Length: 328
Figure 1 (tube, one colour):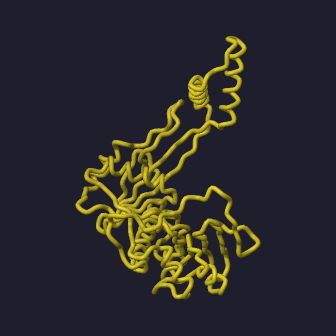
Figure 2: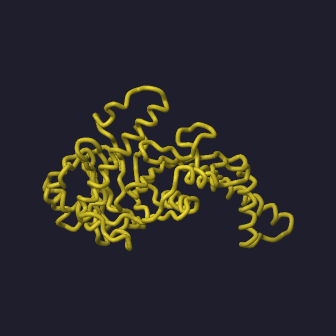
Figure 3: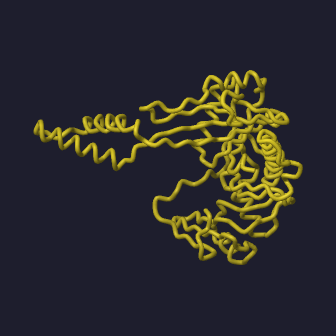
Protein backbone atom coordinates (compact mmCIF):
# COMPACT_ATOMS: atom_id res chain seq x y z
CA UNK A 1 0.00 0.00 0.00
CA UNK A 2 1.70 3.20 -1.13
CA UNK A 3 -1.03 5.77 -1.68
CA UNK A 4 0.36 8.07 1.03
CA UNK A 5 3.90 8.18 2.41
CA UNK A 6 4.51 11.78 3.52
CA UNK A 7 1.59 14.15 3.88
CA UNK A 8 0.76 17.77 4.56
CA UNK A 9 -2.78 18.32 5.82
CA UNK A 10 -4.85 21.45 5.20
CA UNK A 11 -8.27 22.55 6.33
CA UNK A 12 -10.63 23.44 3.48
CA UNK A 13 -12.34 26.78 4.06
CA UNK A 14 -16.04 26.65 4.97
CA UNK A 15 -18.62 27.11 2.27
CA UNK A 16 -16.89 25.27 -0.56
CA UNK A 17 -18.89 22.55 -2.25
CA UNK A 18 -18.72 21.03 -5.71
CA UNK A 19 -20.15 18.04 -7.48
CA UNK A 20 -17.91 15.38 -8.94
CA UNK A 21 -18.78 16.56 -12.45
CA UNK A 22 -17.90 20.16 -11.60
CA UNK A 23 -14.56 19.07 -10.12
CA UNK A 24 -13.81 16.98 -13.20
CA UNK A 25 -14.55 19.94 -15.46
CA UNK A 26 -12.38 22.23 -13.36
CA UNK A 27 -9.32 19.97 -13.41
CA UNK A 28 -9.82 19.36 -17.11
CA UNK A 29 -8.78 22.96 -17.69
CA UNK A 30 -5.30 21.98 -16.54
CA UNK A 31 -4.96 18.44 -17.81
CA UNK A 32 -1.29 17.51 -17.95
CA UNK A 33 0.58 17.91 -21.23
CA UNK A 34 4.21 16.74 -21.63
CA UNK A 35 6.97 19.30 -21.95
CA UNK A 36 7.57 20.67 -25.42
CA UNK A 37 11.03 20.37 -26.95
CA UNK A 38 12.25 23.67 -25.46
CA UNK A 39 9.97 23.79 -22.43
CA UNK A 40 11.58 23.55 -18.99
CA UNK A 41 8.51 22.54 -17.00
CA UNK A 42 4.94 21.34 -17.44
CA UNK A 43 2.42 20.51 -14.72
CA UNK A 44 -1.19 19.44 -14.58
CA UNK A 45 -3.68 16.81 -13.56
CA UNK A 46 -3.57 13.17 -14.67
CA UNK A 47 -5.78 10.12 -14.21
CA UNK A 48 -5.22 8.66 -10.70
CA UNK A 49 -5.70 5.12 -11.99
CA UNK A 50 -3.21 5.68 -14.79
CA UNK A 51 -5.79 4.90 -17.48
CA UNK A 52 -5.54 7.14 -20.52
CA UNK A 53 -8.53 9.43 -21.02
CA UNK A 54 -10.00 8.28 -17.70
CA UNK A 55 -11.50 10.54 -15.02
CA UNK A 56 -9.27 13.05 -13.26
CA UNK A 57 -11.27 12.70 -10.04
CA UNK A 58 -11.85 9.26 -8.54
CA UNK A 59 -14.52 8.98 -5.85
CA UNK A 60 -14.09 5.99 -3.55
CA UNK A 61 -16.47 5.70 -0.61
CA UNK A 62 -17.11 9.42 -0.97
CA UNK A 63 -13.42 10.31 -0.82
CA UNK A 64 -11.94 12.10 -3.83
CA UNK A 65 -8.53 11.08 -5.09
CA UNK A 66 -6.61 13.25 -7.57
CA UNK A 67 -3.11 13.16 -9.01
CA UNK A 68 -0.94 16.11 -10.00
CA UNK A 69 2.00 15.52 -12.32
CA UNK A 70 5.09 17.65 -12.77
CA UNK A 71 7.54 17.13 -15.62
CA UNK A 72 10.74 19.14 -15.76
CA UNK A 73 13.90 19.35 -17.80
CA UNK A 74 17.23 20.62 -16.60
CA UNK A 75 20.54 21.14 -18.33
CA UNK A 76 23.62 20.53 -16.14
CA UNK A 77 25.12 23.83 -15.07
CA UNK A 78 28.63 22.62 -15.91
CA UNK A 79 27.60 22.04 -19.54
CA UNK A 80 26.02 25.49 -19.81
CA UNK A 81 29.13 27.12 -18.30
CA UNK A 82 31.43 25.29 -20.70
CA UNK A 83 29.34 26.30 -23.71
CA UNK A 84 29.17 29.88 -22.41
CA UNK A 85 32.96 30.06 -22.03
CA UNK A 86 33.33 28.80 -25.60
CA UNK A 87 30.91 31.42 -26.96
CA UNK A 88 32.59 34.22 -25.02
CA UNK A 89 36.02 33.13 -26.24
CA UNK A 90 34.72 33.05 -29.82
CA UNK A 91 33.25 36.55 -29.53
CA UNK A 92 36.48 37.90 -28.06
CA UNK A 93 38.53 36.25 -30.81
CA UNK A 94 36.39 37.67 -33.62
CA UNK A 95 35.57 41.12 -32.23
CA UNK A 96 38.41 41.81 -29.84
CA UNK A 97 36.06 42.55 -26.93
CA UNK A 98 34.79 40.59 -23.97
CA UNK A 99 31.02 40.15 -23.63
CA UNK A 100 29.45 42.24 -20.88
CA UNK A 101 27.29 41.03 -18.02
CA UNK A 102 23.97 41.45 -19.85
CA UNK A 103 25.29 39.83 -23.01
CA UNK A 104 26.55 36.86 -20.99
CA UNK A 105 23.14 36.50 -19.41
CA UNK A 106 21.46 36.49 -22.84
CA UNK A 107 24.00 33.99 -24.16
CA UNK A 108 23.38 31.73 -21.19
CA UNK A 109 19.63 31.78 -21.81
CA UNK A 110 20.16 31.02 -25.50
CA UNK A 111 22.45 28.10 -24.71
CA UNK A 112 20.02 26.65 -22.19
CA UNK A 113 17.19 26.96 -24.72
CA UNK A 114 19.29 25.20 -27.37
CA UNK A 115 20.21 22.32 -25.06
CA UNK A 116 16.76 21.70 -23.56
CA UNK A 117 15.57 19.41 -26.41
CA UNK A 118 18.45 17.06 -25.52
CA UNK A 119 17.93 17.21 -21.75
CA UNK A 120 16.55 14.32 -19.73
CA UNK A 121 13.10 14.76 -18.25
CA UNK A 122 12.17 14.14 -14.64
CA UNK A 123 8.65 13.47 -13.48
CA UNK A 124 6.97 13.65 -10.09
CA UNK A 125 3.45 12.62 -9.16
CA UNK A 126 1.61 14.02 -6.16
CA UNK A 127 -1.45 12.19 -4.85
CA UNK A 128 -4.15 14.43 -3.41
CA UNK A 129 -7.07 13.46 -1.20
CA UNK A 130 -10.11 15.72 -0.84
CA UNK A 131 -12.50 14.92 2.02
CA UNK A 132 -15.44 17.28 1.55
CA UNK A 133 -17.37 16.00 4.56
CA UNK A 134 -14.51 16.73 6.98
CA UNK A 135 -13.24 19.76 5.02
CA UNK A 136 -9.82 18.16 4.83
CA UNK A 137 -7.20 18.31 2.07
CA UNK A 138 -4.26 15.90 2.22
CA UNK A 139 -1.31 16.33 -0.14
CA UNK A 140 1.14 13.45 -0.45
CA UNK A 141 4.38 15.42 -0.33
CA UNK A 142 7.00 16.40 2.21
CA UNK A 143 8.02 19.34 0.02
CA UNK A 144 6.09 22.40 1.18
CA UNK A 145 6.77 24.33 -2.04
CA UNK A 146 5.45 21.48 -4.16
CA UNK A 147 2.39 21.11 -1.93
CA UNK A 148 1.74 24.85 -2.29
CA UNK A 149 1.88 24.47 -6.07
CA UNK A 150 -0.75 21.74 -5.91
CA UNK A 151 -2.98 23.81 -3.63
CA UNK A 152 -2.62 26.83 -5.93
CA UNK A 153 -3.78 24.71 -8.86
CA UNK A 154 -6.84 23.57 -6.91
CA UNK A 155 -7.66 27.15 -5.95
CA UNK A 156 -7.38 28.13 -9.60
CA UNK A 157 -9.50 25.27 -10.94
CA UNK A 158 -12.11 24.65 -8.20
CA UNK A 159 -14.69 27.43 -7.91
CA UNK A 160 -14.63 29.04 -4.46
CA UNK A 161 -11.95 26.68 -3.15
CA UNK A 162 -9.55 27.81 -0.44
CA UNK A 163 -7.46 26.22 2.31
CA UNK A 164 -6.04 27.14 5.68
CA UNK A 165 -3.00 25.70 7.37
CA UNK A 166 -3.77 23.49 10.34
CA UNK A 167 -2.93 25.09 13.65
CA UNK A 168 -2.99 23.33 17.02
CA UNK A 169 -3.40 24.58 20.57
CA UNK A 170 -0.11 22.96 21.56
CA UNK A 171 2.91 23.46 19.36
CA UNK A 172 4.10 20.05 18.05
CA UNK A 173 7.68 20.58 19.29
CA UNK A 174 6.42 21.44 22.79
CA UNK A 175 4.16 18.39 22.85
CA UNK A 176 6.92 16.06 21.63
CA UNK A 177 9.28 17.47 24.28
CA UNK A 178 6.74 16.68 26.99
CA UNK A 179 6.11 13.17 25.67
CA UNK A 180 9.83 12.37 25.59
CA UNK A 181 10.60 13.96 28.96
CA UNK A 182 7.72 12.22 30.73
CA UNK A 183 7.72 9.07 28.59
CA UNK A 184 3.94 9.43 28.58
CA UNK A 185 2.66 9.68 25.02
CA UNK A 186 -0.98 10.63 24.47
CA UNK A 187 -3.64 7.96 24.68
CA UNK A 188 -3.60 5.62 21.71
CA UNK A 189 -0.02 6.48 20.73
CA UNK A 190 3.34 4.87 21.46
CA UNK A 191 6.81 6.36 21.07
CA UNK A 192 9.00 4.44 18.63
CA UNK A 193 12.78 4.41 18.21
CA UNK A 194 13.65 7.43 16.08
CA UNK A 195 13.82 11.14 16.78
CA UNK A 196 15.80 14.27 16.08
CA UNK A 197 16.56 16.98 18.63
CA UNK A 198 17.94 20.39 17.72
CA UNK A 199 19.45 23.08 19.90
CA UNK A 200 17.79 26.48 19.79
CA UNK A 201 20.98 28.40 20.60
CA UNK A 202 23.66 29.57 18.20
CA UNK A 203 25.30 26.14 18.10
CA UNK A 204 22.34 24.63 16.18
CA UNK A 205 23.63 21.26 17.38
CA UNK A 206 21.58 18.26 16.23
CA UNK A 207 21.23 14.89 17.95
CA UNK A 208 19.64 12.03 16.03
CA UNK A 209 18.55 8.64 17.30
CA UNK A 210 17.77 5.82 14.90
CA UNK A 211 16.60 2.35 15.90
CA UNK A 212 17.40 3.30 19.48
CA UNK A 213 15.31 3.31 22.66
CA UNK A 214 14.23 6.82 23.59
CA UNK A 215 13.26 6.14 27.20
CA UNK A 216 16.76 6.96 28.44
CA UNK A 217 18.15 9.71 30.66
CA UNK A 218 20.30 11.03 27.83
CA UNK A 219 17.24 12.07 25.84
CA UNK A 220 15.68 13.73 28.89
CA UNK A 221 18.92 15.61 29.53
CA UNK A 222 19.06 16.91 25.96
CA UNK A 223 15.53 18.27 26.39
CA UNK A 224 16.41 19.75 29.78
CA UNK A 225 19.38 21.44 28.10
CA UNK A 226 17.04 23.16 25.67
CA UNK A 227 17.06 20.96 22.60
CA UNK A 228 13.72 20.72 20.84
CA UNK A 229 12.34 17.72 18.92
CA UNK A 230 12.04 18.34 15.20
CA UNK A 231 10.97 14.77 14.39
CA UNK A 232 9.59 11.92 16.45
CA UNK A 233 8.54 8.44 15.36
CA UNK A 234 5.18 7.32 16.73
CA UNK A 235 2.65 4.54 16.26
CA UNK A 236 -1.08 5.09 16.51
CA UNK A 237 -3.37 2.32 17.76
CA UNK A 238 -0.94 -0.38 16.56
CA UNK A 239 -2.24 0.42 13.06
CA UNK A 240 -0.16 3.22 11.58
CA UNK A 241 3.48 4.12 12.19
CA UNK A 242 4.68 7.56 11.19
CA UNK A 243 7.00 10.42 11.99
CA UNK A 244 5.60 13.71 13.30
CA UNK A 245 7.56 16.87 12.52
CA UNK A 246 7.57 20.16 14.38
CA UNK A 247 5.93 21.71 11.30
CA UNK A 248 2.95 19.31 11.71
CA UNK A 249 3.87 17.17 8.73
CA UNK A 250 3.23 13.42 8.91
CA UNK A 251 6.06 11.50 7.29
CA UNK A 252 7.24 7.93 6.73
CA UNK A 253 3.71 6.56 6.97
CA UNK A 254 3.49 2.78 7.23
CA UNK A 255 0.19 0.93 7.51
CA UNK A 256 0.79 -1.99 9.82
CA UNK A 257 -0.29 -5.59 9.54
CA UNK A 258 -4.02 -5.95 9.94
CA UNK A 259 -5.02 -2.67 8.32
CA UNK A 260 -5.40 -4.40 4.95
CA UNK A 261 -7.75 -7.12 6.15
CA UNK A 262 -10.38 -7.68 3.53
CA UNK A 263 -8.41 -5.88 0.82
CA UNK A 264 -7.99 -9.05 -1.16
CA UNK A 265 -5.86 -9.55 -4.22
CA UNK A 266 -8.32 -9.18 -7.05
CA UNK A 267 -8.16 -7.09 -10.18
CA UNK A 268 -5.88 -4.08 -10.43
CA UNK A 269 -8.79 -1.66 -10.19
CA UNK A 270 -10.11 -3.51 -7.13
CA UNK A 271 -6.70 -3.21 -5.46
CA UNK A 272 -6.63 0.51 -6.26
CA UNK A 273 -10.02 1.01 -4.63
CA UNK A 274 -9.03 -1.08 -1.62
CA UNK A 275 -5.72 0.74 -1.12
CA UNK A 276 -7.43 4.13 -1.29
CA UNK A 277 -10.23 3.05 1.04
CA UNK A 278 -7.79 1.67 3.60
CA UNK A 279 -5.41 4.65 3.45
CA UNK A 280 -8.15 7.28 3.69
CA UNK A 281 -9.94 5.28 6.37
CA UNK A 282 -6.85 4.95 8.58
CA UNK A 283 -5.58 8.49 8.06
CA UNK A 284 -9.12 9.77 8.50
CA UNK A 285 -8.94 8.47 12.07
CA UNK A 286 -5.26 9.20 12.72
CA UNK A 287 -5.38 12.91 11.86
CA UNK A 288 -8.19 13.79 14.31
CA UNK A 289 -6.52 11.70 17.03
CA UNK A 290 -3.23 13.52 16.44
CA UNK A 291 -4.92 16.91 16.53
CA UNK A 292 -6.57 15.95 19.82
CA UNK A 293 -3.17 14.92 21.19
CA UNK A 294 -1.94 18.41 20.33
CA UNK A 295 -4.74 20.09 22.24
CA UNK A 296 -7.16 20.36 19.34
CA UNK A 297 -7.30 22.83 16.49
CA UNK A 298 -6.69 26.50 17.16
CA UNK A 299 -7.88 29.48 15.17
CA UNK A 300 -6.99 29.42 11.48
CA UNK A 301 -5.64 32.95 11.39
CA UNK A 302 -2.02 32.09 12.05
CA UNK A 303 0.44 29.39 11.13
CA UNK A 304 1.83 27.12 13.88
CA UNK A 305 3.93 28.99 16.42
CA UNK A 306 7.16 27.61 15.05
CA UNK A 307 7.55 26.66 11.43
CA UNK A 308 10.35 24.42 10.32
CA UNK A 309 13.48 26.45 11.04
CA UNK A 310 15.59 27.55 8.13
CA UNK A 311 18.61 25.38 7.60
CA UNK A 312 21.62 26.83 9.32
CA UNK A 313 24.24 28.15 6.96
CA UNK A 314 26.99 26.76 9.15
CA UNK A 315 27.60 23.06 9.58
CA UNK A 316 25.74 21.43 12.46
CA UNK A 317 27.23 19.08 14.99
CA UNK A 318 25.45 15.76 14.61
CA UNK A 319 25.48 12.91 17.09
CA UNK A 320 24.02 9.62 15.89
CA UNK A 321 22.86 7.03 18.36
CA UNK A 322 24.28 4.14 16.36
CA UNK A 323 27.21 3.52 14.02
CA UNK A 324 25.22 3.17 10.82
CA UNK A 325 23.73 6.23 9.14
CA UNK A 326 20.30 7.12 10.43
CA UNK A 327 17.59 7.22 7.73
CA UNK A 328 16.99 10.95 8.05
